[in-house]
Length: 308
Image 1 (cartoon, rainbow, N blue to C red):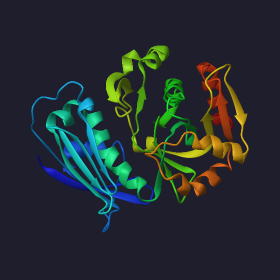
Image 2: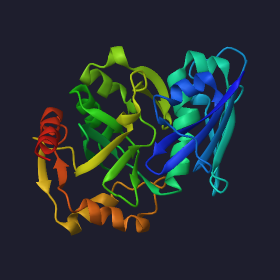
Image 3: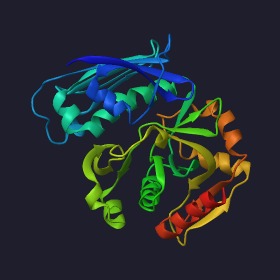
C-alpha cells in the first residue's frame, strides 16, 4: 500500500511525522492539524497496512500489551502490531486492511492516538487518571478512584451536549498546567450506564479493563480542536451515597488528599505533579458527593462551567 509522509501538530510544541498509507492520514487529519514540514519533528510514527484474514468479532479482547521501561508493544495477532520506543521517540508498526477499513475508529485509537499519547506523556505532558468535560474552551477535570463513577458522569455530560476530552485519561502540559489535551479520546461505559442514559443506539460492545463494556465512538465527527481545552475547575468524586448530589469547596490540604485517592499505577509519578496541582489550586476545586443523584451531579458540573 502506497505511503505518504506528513507532519502534524500533536500538541503545542510537539510535531509528529507520520509515514503511513493515505487512509491513515485521513484519520490523522481528524486528530491533529497538519503542520508545515520541520527539520526535526518531536516524534516519528511509521505504519503500514496489508491484507489479512477477515477481522474477527471482539478483536479488542485479543489485544495484548508488553510493557518495558522504555518500550511498549501492542498487538492483536494477524491484525496489529505497534511498538513505541520512548528512548528513540518513535513508534513503528503495521495493521491489517480489514482493521483499517472496517473499524477506522479503532484503528485510529490503537495506531495513532495511543502511541502518540505514550510519547507525549514521556515528554512535556503528564498523563492523569481523570476525565474532562468542556463548555467551549473551558474544562472541568473529573477525577476519582476506579469505580467512583467518572465515566458515568462524563457520559451524562456528553449526553447533555458537552465536549469530552476523555473519561479515563487526559494529558496535562507540565510547562502550562492549565492546558489540557486528550490522551485517547473515547468514552467507555458499563451496560447499566448505557441503559440508564439511553445510549443503546450510539454505543457498541468493547472489551476494556478485563470486562465487556460499551464504547461511544467520538471519532466520527472529530476535529483537531476537540482535543484541547483550558482547565477551569477540578471535581473530585467522593462517596456516591447518600444523595442528593452536592459540591463542597476544598482547601488545599483536602484537595491534595482527595486527589491522591484517584491515583493509578499507569499515570505520572505523583511526586512529579506538584507544579500541576499548585496551578490547579488557583482555580476552583470541589468534592462531589452523592453522585448517585446523576441529574443533580450534572447540574452541578454545568453550573461550574457556566460560572467559570
